[in-house]
Length: 270
Picture 1 (cartoon, rainbow, N blue to C red):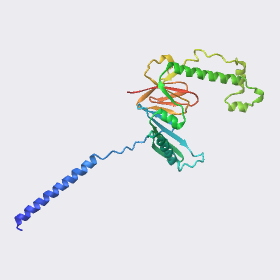
Picture 2 (picture 1 turned 90 degrees about the vertical axis):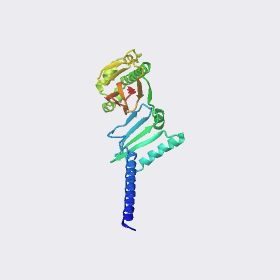
Picture 3 (picture 1 turned 135 degrees about the vertical axis):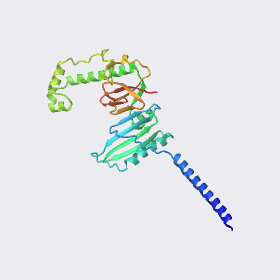
Picture 4 (picture 1 turned 90 degrees about the horizontal axis):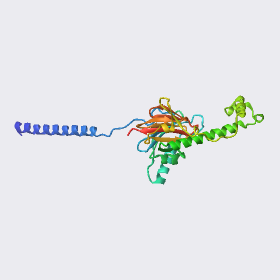
């Protein structure tokens, strides 16, 4: 083969090599460009108290926090147990309505993030009775009257305690002093009919202003009622008012005390 033919052959081979290298480069670049992004954001984050997150699509995310340090419970198989419970529920209903999003264990403290498709699923799975509806003056006033009646019955019971049959230590354990009981026994012990004031619910907003139920006139607002000791977070929304059994933590969070029927009035930012 003469020198001219050798040069032509080398030139052709070099061109092919460059083309192949270029193809590999663009293929690699394309793979990198379309590689699925990995979301490492934690759903639990720094939350360390039982919390429910409400979303506009009706789904609910529960952040459950439990300290097993002094319980004596073996938690080595707890994650598997939780997954089995969820799988059993979903299989029984023929649909994936519950999902374990995240599980964390740190020195005996277990935190889980579980997503539920809707409130009915959450209530059924956890045997709870959380209620969501549009804000209703008549409903919150009804709850206020029921609460007033319960406290009135308690006051009557306290006023009838036989001081000769109970010690001051027992009274203290129940949250009373001897002087308080004596003062109550001097008061009228007969139950009274609920007054109009008893039947009117009052709410506090984030600024500490107090409003009566009828002062809240926006018929598009939502309300949540429950006796649970839990924090409520409104995703893409705001907590507007709470009754005396809850406190507003920030724009979208309410802290429910668990010592009475809490009412949280909120809205989503559609």
